[in-house]
Amino acid sequence: MEDFSALPLVVLAEKFAALPGIGMKTAQRLAYAVMEMPEDEAAAFAEAILNAKHQIHDCPVCQNLTEQPVCSICGNPKRDRTTICVVEGPKDVAAIERTHEYHGLYHVLHGLISPLDGIGAEQLRVAELLKRIQEGGIEELIMATNPSVEGEATAMYLSRLCKPLGVRVTRLAFGLPVGGVIEYTDEVTLYRALSNRSEM
Image (cartoon, rainbow, N blue to C red; front, side, top):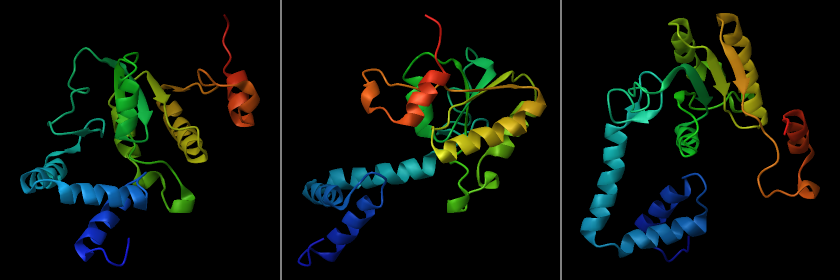
């Protein structure tokens, strides 16, 4: 930020810039927007952040974020309790729920296996997933990790770990996006699309 900016404003912009997807220019705009807020609005903004940090915790069953003793999905008796969709983070749960097509349960890993970043299975919520399977009643695990190197490695690791426990392990199909153009599609996506083709 510019040398003439007040230090607290620089610090505020740096805090915004530390958030994922926020560049320094956007962080500066956000910092200036906060400065333009009336004091009661700024206080409410800060209080909302602190309240979220203090009141939200991991669901003891699926590890999704919730402010309740058990999240609304785990607590819903209408959900299919034989299927668990395994995802990287809470944002993935929200994305899948928006489709209104999946009616089973979830398990949030809170990350992916990434040896280069020093993240192994022991840093993820794998033990909690195994415990849920061992308690019985789970018939299928849907691996819904991203189609990245880390996502594939995590899905393969969990598949090898969970199949011997008697559950069916499936993977989300990946391929051409709606509205995509084959000419501009990368080789890996085209390979996935061909491998996951279905009868019409």
